[in-house]
Image: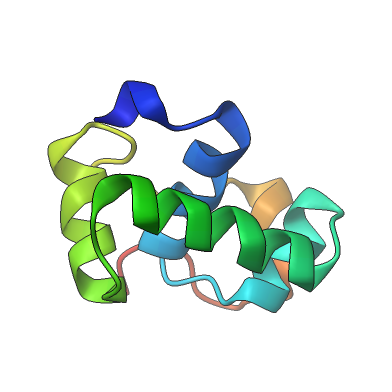
Length: 87
């Protein structure tokens, strides 16, 4: 199933699974929030879910992210978050 996702969708699923909002993901990826939202919606449809919690679970199962994954220092800075990853 992860192979059905585009590289951009995988990036957005990873960020969402780390707790980033659409606006934080948009700042990190230098995209419009609506673009991030569209990619996220398409990824969720491809993965067969409409629940954010299930998206995180699927991201781990499909190895898009791991339990030890965290935002990189650059991602953290761009997002404006004080915390990163699985807080």
